Length: 322
Ligand code: F6P
Image (cartoon, rainbow, N blue to C red; front, side):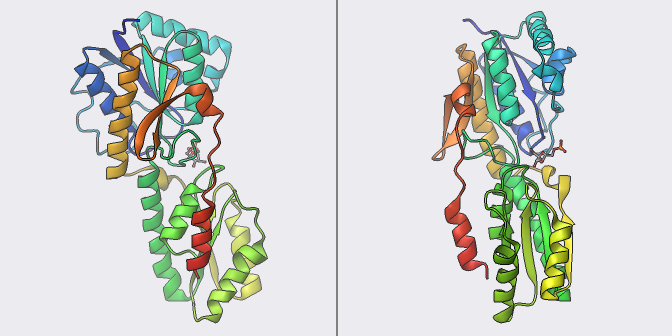
């Protein structure tokens, strides 16, 4: 199929580096002589006909910005047949022959549905959670985990000054990648993850008490959002150990900020590859990182993959964070 016009959208939670991916898609497509349309607010933009022309300057000065210039949304309407049909009509009206869909698994499911209905789509992984099974790395994770690290370092300053324990919740929905990596990077005494069934006594209290016996006087406990309950955990720690304890939920501050080198470069590579596929009329694919290389998979296969938990890193944390 001769492709003339491609669309690009961002969907789901925004992630730092999404703008760099949009920029790469636009510039790579224009360099191939294609036209590019920006779809505003994810799949909602297709339903509501919010489509804009993008030229080479439309994506100037965005590589360093967090968020997404195309806006984003989670779109329950798109999961209904009516929404999907309206989206198809919008594509036809604008002559969109293919779409690059930047986001997480939910975004990929939308890309699969559109592909099955005749609009070839290529998914690009973008989520701070890094929980997409088909790729070792998702755009946004590096920036977010560095933000977590900086914020937990600040909590450490005050915990150290007061001989306190600080319990901090980091994002990640059902996955513990942000918690595990920031916990290792910050030397957290305990890291609580949804992948490991929590035993408060074994996984938190004993670790704090063991460290206390060797002279440690302040403690960091990193808790993944998927486990939650930081206020209750802080209370338990204070009651059992007698250590003054505070709880903090980092929240959406983790989603913003200027993207790191890792995120800008990965976004540029992935956005470029997505266009190479679409320009040949190849859809129903996702791009991914495997062993440091950019590869692509069938979306159906990608959605059925499982991401292994990094047991080795958790073991390392237990061995050295004490
Ligand atoms: O998927 C990214 C993420 O930030 C998760 O870590 C979190 O659970 C979720 O999005 C929050 O979503 P919202 O911004 O819609 O509240």
